[in-house]
Length: 616
Ligand code: PEP
Ligand code: MG
View 1 (cartoon, protein in one colour):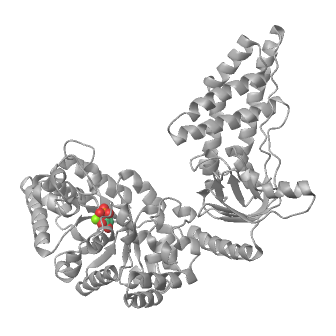
View 2 (spheres, protein in one colour):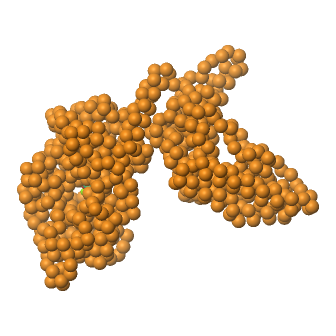
């Protein structure tokens, strides 16, 4: 009970505790509004009883029976759930019940020390939990609470209880110190609309369970049980990680609208998951994934990408003492193409140096200013044999599918010619060795320097496609080191200089009939989608989990409204003005949370937060 509540109780005057907002960690995105149902936080009382020698076998038998009942209880909960991650969590808990560290040790204590099954279970669970909680890794610390929950269930069964928590009424927001995965699964059945816990982190099994059951949840809210009582009205903002207790009526109404808009949008995201990003007037915007590791391809496919728009091959060069061989490049690219078929994969030749360090080439150690030093294409041209080796591997793999080669950090036409010369040379080397390779692979460049953007019309004459890399384009245009937080506040994607450069490149591509895509982080931010498409970009490549939300923005829009916004924003005098114009339009059309970098359930992972928030 809050202090205000205690005061009221003591003085006998009825007083309503005031509104309160508490912060925690958003663990399962969404918005839940309902009356609180507080789960009693008191720990189960463990009877500490010594037993007679003649009772030992009976006590061991009770323990084994308690384990069996707990197992069956978890089985019953599991069987009510759909197949998937939630079931696996409960299976893992069932396996923990059979772990000899628990079972053999409990039996040893009953036999060796002559104590009751309850006491032995409690001691062993405490030992295991304390060991796990000392671990550095959050994952192991979370497993400590799994053990505590399991032990509590076993204890309840030993005491003749069926092990279940009382069920909250449908539509409640459950407030608890912490919840076991099984409790969380039961809550979904009870149709609770939100969960708030005092303990737990994002990797706790109850958080994972809440995510997969789609119950909005905020965890780690310090002392929440001290502030809420059953029946208090609660808003769970599980996007920002805030819990509002006893909101004002106007606030409640506003949040009901937020929730309705969020839910409508989320439903659409889920329904349209497998469909292409076609705007309402029929314009198809190709959405592809940025991938650095082969393991991310599964995520790209799951999130409905139409291939890979940026495969960052430099990761294959990191943490090793020799560069990958031609065969390694070949095999990896062939495998990636196979996994992405029938969609294309854009392999960017290695972009090493500066923010992508390597111990293979030591140039950066001698450089005062590595971002402007020997990185990316410049390094590849210096280390020509390494470059040729990669190009040969890629050209060979191209016989197996729609492979495209993209060269990073091209400054202008002469450097592009040097890169194209290297590609020709790699082709000739393969021809001389009579090794199979694709004769005409699509070749493109990244436009990520102001110089390249300004001569995009000249560059477009020599390439098949251009991809705007806004991460570097912003760094070089606005002179802000992308790795330096001190100047992070200057990172403003809607700076008029950036908008004009993007516009210039897309116009140059259009005039030359060359496809223009954009693969910087800007592509993943729903606030910018209209502007980018309106400026003429027709392909966006981003981290996979951002795809469903961007797709839905596009599917709900028409090209003419996107172009109207782009035209308007091109007129803005400065970045503040541009941001205001964009937010005003986007907020009138899409859920507020989504546009603040908060997530859909499909995009619950990382979305970069940029200073645009300040403009809101
Ligand atoms: C970019 O610069 O925008 C880009 C996509 O490349 P990277 O972030 O890998 O430098
Ligand atoms: Mg770049």
